[in-house]
Image 1: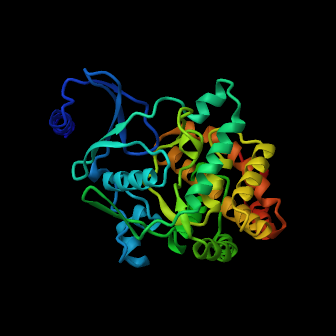
Image 2: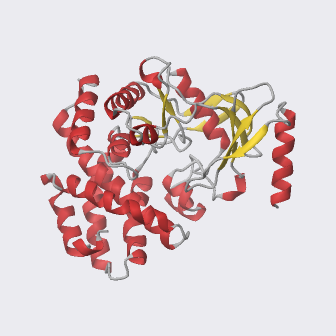
Length: 363
């Protein structure tokens, strides 16, 4: 199978005049995609994306109800794109149409799961900050890009160069699927935890009104993986276009608090309370129409849901997928969760964690 895939990739590159390009594999992530950097003989560099279409369960058909989504698998329940190239291509084109910076798609074959992309460089926010660059202008620009995204209204279907992709809501089914991850997977990582049926029922009851608020507030473009390792600094561009965006193929219409949580509750690097507060102040300054108090209540509640989701995903990556490095990110997430749970409106959720996940298991 690997040799067949290699031949398909070579044919695709030859078809687009890149047969002689030097190919350099790039580090992977938690997905089923693989990337290479291409160095064409004519100079410069490009990114080669390989996403085998059969590597994941099906994405969500817009007509499916909860039962059909459940039968199709996790991607359909969570409304993930299953890595489909048509999702990447159409979302990238829509971002560029808004004056933002996703990579230009140079060539694509959606059926084969292959694409060649503009190379936005190596200036990942996370790496620049680790190397000593001031994080303030980077986060300010990331917030400006979010505010610009949140001012636009994506159509129900994204279209580009003959490809179409449904732009779906991050609905109640998807949000509950997110919440279900922690009680399912955390005990497999922490065998001392025992979530009884009564504990799980209480968990579901606590989340139900938050999920309703999240689904009813699904009104803006949501990148869904908006954090410092998916943002590239492009200082030669202007305004919000200085933020190069990657890994956006799972985009949905969601509550505007969701991407803020992804950015400010970053699993891979510490975002200080001061930086979080400054970023939120900037967001509210750019969106003066918002009710700050009501929005912050949603931000803490949906932030807690998002953090719980990521804790569940990391527990799954460690226990099911044999990727122990993700355990090292979990203490940081517990710290973010504690900050969210300090909001008085989440007292019941805090009590649930205090009763069922003692401090010794939050590591």
